[in-house]
Each structure stands twice: as C-alpha cells, then as structure tokens.
Image 1 (tube, rainbow, N blue to C red):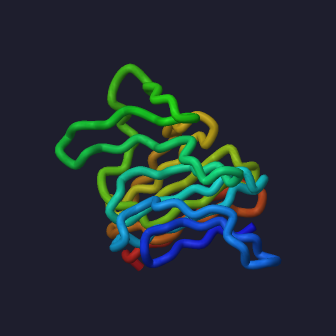
Image 2 (image 1 turned 45 degrees about the vertical axis):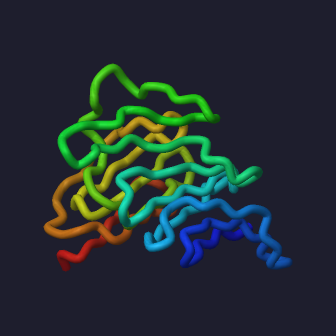
Length: 165
C-alpha cells in the first residue's frame, strides 16, 4: 500500500501493484500541503498539515481518523483532547505543555511503530506515544522551522532538519 497526498488536500491509500485507490479522505484544506508517514505494520497513516498544529492517525483499513494529537490554539489556550475510535477522551487533567503552537511540516514513525515524531514552524520536535497520543518529549534547539524528522533503523536516534542550516 502507498499513502498519497493530493493537491486538493486529500489523502489516498493506493494499492501499489494495481494503482487502485482503497479510500480517499479530505484531511486538510485544499491549499494546505500535508505530509504523511505509514506505520511499520501498515495499520496506520500519520498526517500533518502546514496550517494545522495537530497530527492525525488514519486507519488504513477504513480511512477513518482514529486519533488526533493535542494542540495549542495560538492564543495561549489549548485543546487538550484526543479522538480515539470516534470517542473524545481527555489526555490529562491540565493543558499539556508539550504541544505544537504552529503548523507542522514533518512526521515520522519509529521503526517499532510505538512512537511518532513531529516537527514544524514552532521550531520544536515532539516525540509522541502513538498508542495513547500523549506527548513524551519536546526537543528545542532549531533556530528556524523544522522541515524533516527521521528515526534511525534501530529507533535509538532521531534526526531533524530545519531551515536554520
């Protein structure tokens, strides 16, 4: 299977052998480019969008969004919820300090599929538990937006690249 992002903001799951689309979902606005990553076991597609501060996990069997990550709303407020299997549940009692505050440009699954890394315009890289949606670690240090994240083959290291050179 191949996850494809189209210019109209859709994410499609395509059978790589036949070219047949299994499903297509409107994930982000049409003028928003998004990035996708397939989980190592092929069960999920993670997506991020440039004008969104959240990430989504889509079930590859149905195309249904099964989890959405937390986000800050840009005004100091926070939307501290995750959606899991169509049910909204609170991630914790307070606003998590670990959440992006600007658009996202990068997403990657760890080789084991249990972690998700995101990076974006807020110059942060956040490591998430892909099973619960909870942020585990925030990495700061970029002087400009983060454009890429990638795990080493053994999952022991995480690399990030940005516009800061």
